[in-house]
Length: 253
Image: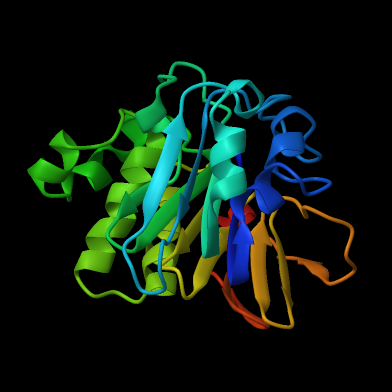
């Protein structure tokens, strides 16, 4: 399994969320609190995406090494300031490649995407869903992984004009039906909103003042964190969030 977070609010450094927070992604990479049987560490790469200016396309940095062992990242993170970030650390499913292109965030234009979980029975369980995608999308996947395919399924819906929350919900429903027992915490941002699903894995939201932060695990001890109930979609913007129950819950597929 992986750990991820998305932030919206006043410009802050990437370091403040990932490296400096008491339980930021650096600590979660080697001391996660809730991996749910998915390993003990997140040492198979990491990545971060942000927006140089409000409304601009996203840029990103990805690496195949553990977050704590990348000598260039600390300086980059300390110098990178933005009002919107998505970052993740990776624990690769056995048999899947450990490469920079397999690490989140996945990106297109203003979209940044991450997945915390696993698709059961990969790849056969979701072959029919993959067949519904344009061939060029399959030929240009970032990596031969379940997360890259999930991104392609979400992106296909976004390109068709589907509302972001509905796109995530549709992919979760389709994959959960095709591959029961999958863990499908999906995280998406366009720099102005955050959309995320809690599907058989941990997720929390903090929305207070002019900040919105959605994360696998709270990155600090502030009392304003709320656990997102399993089987729900959370939509967050600075200072507010709302929850929507997904069509089924993880135990009902």
